[in-house]
Length: 251
Image 1 (tube, rainbow, N blue to C red):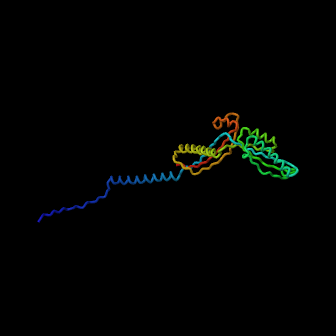
Image 2: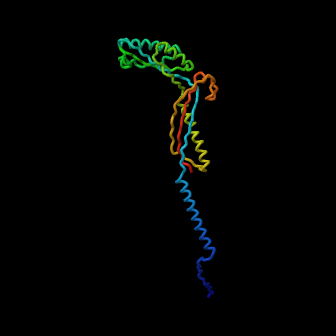
Image 3: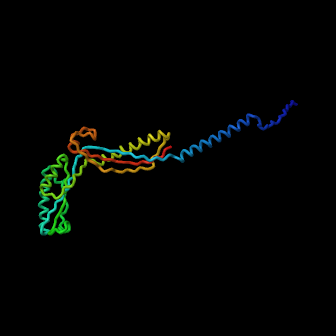
């Protein structure tokens, strides 16, 4: 028989960790957990409580005027409505001849219907009938509008309204003014964000208004648009202004 060998296996004893190393390890875990909770609370406060700021920006575009619209009123009094209408037509033809002679195309001239009514409705105590109509013309000869107005009065115009200056592609100019206004607002909010250490921003509202267009005239070369244009000196400067109000959230 071959000899057999046996080995006694001793059970491994388990001991609880009660030493200073184990306590130090547990404290580290608790501190790490508290740190995570604190960071989460800070981030939540940061995200849920942004700084809300509203800024206003203004932008304007100035260019030489390219067109002028002139509205002329013709009015005639007569003993009968038919005669008043006939007289208004004669004056209207004379006015149109002057407009065409000044270089305005017929396609740029429009006229309203002739209206006739008792003269007493327009002036107390007046007798007979009155006929009136309006003629609107658009001219590119802006620099000579003053002379044209004088000629219209000489031809029998009852009233010539203040010429209204305009420019071609006005919508494109308005878009440029809007971009300038938004850029102005962004510049302002950038300064505010830097001052308050708020690098993140989000637009939450934007409102835009259009200011009344203005026109100015000068005898010198244009210094408003910066082009030193002689055209602006003779036609006047047409200015479009836009204003925006933008609200931001800053973090």
